[in-house]
Amino acid sequence: EAGVTQFPSHSVIEKGQTVTLRCDPISGHDNLYWYRRVMGKEIKFLLHFVKESKQDESGMPNNRFLAERTGGTYSTLKVQPAELEDSGVYFCASSPQGWANVLTFGAGSRLTVL
Amino acid sequence: AQTVTQSQPEMSVQEAETVTLSCTYDTSESDYYLFWYKQPPSRQMILVIRQEAYKQQNATENRFSVNFQKAAKSFSLKISDSQLGDAAMYFCAYLGTLVNRGSTLGRLYFGRGTQLTVWP
Image (tube, rainbow over all chains, first blue to last red; front, side):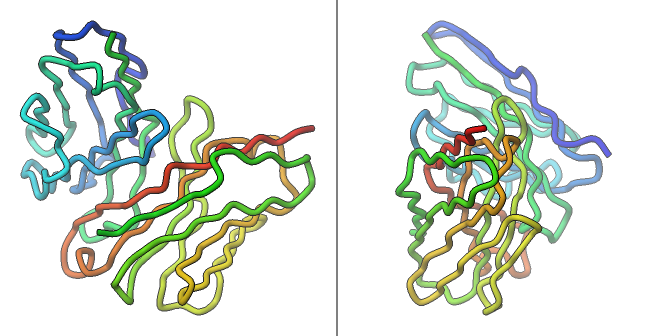
C-alpha cells in the first residue's frame, strides 16, 4: 500500500511568488490534514478535509493560504503571495473515516521563502 | 488550549544504551491519546507508540516503551538497546477524544521535538 505522498519535497521561492504544494493521501482515506512546522517550533494544525469538504480550517494563518481537495482525492495547498514567515515544513496526513487517531503522515514539503 | 512540552531539544546516546525522552502536556480532559512520532532525516514521520489515557498499563513496542504518569501529565519515551537507525527527530503529540469521539477530527497538538543522535 502506498503511503502519503507529498510534492515537492523542497521548494525555494522568492517573497511575493506563488507556490502550490500537493498531497496524495492513502487511497480510500476520507480524512486529510495539513500541518506546518516553522523551524524550531511546534508542528501546528492548519486544516482538515473530510472527503472534499473542509471540516476545520481554523488553523490556516491567513487568506494567503488556499487549500483544496477536488473530488476528495489529492489535496493542494497554495500560498499566494508567499512571505518570509511562511517558510517551514508542510506535512500532510490522512486517516480512514472514523479513525482520527491513526494518522499516517507524509515526508513533508519544505518551503523556503527568500 | 492543550499544550505539549518537550524540554530536551537535543539528546544523544551510545549505541546499545538506553535513552529517555521527556514530554509533558497540559489538558483539562480526562480521556485522550498520546503519541510519539519519529521523523528520520528527509523521510516521513512515522508513529512509534500510542497510549490511551484510560489505560493504566504503559504501552510498549519492542525496544520502545513509555512511562505514562497521568496525574503528573507526563509521557516519556524510553528507547532500549539504541540502534543507529533510531537517530531522528522525535515528536510527542496529544489528541483529545472530546473532538475525536463520534467525529473525524484529528487535530494533534505537538511538542517542538527532540533531536536524537545515536553514536556508534
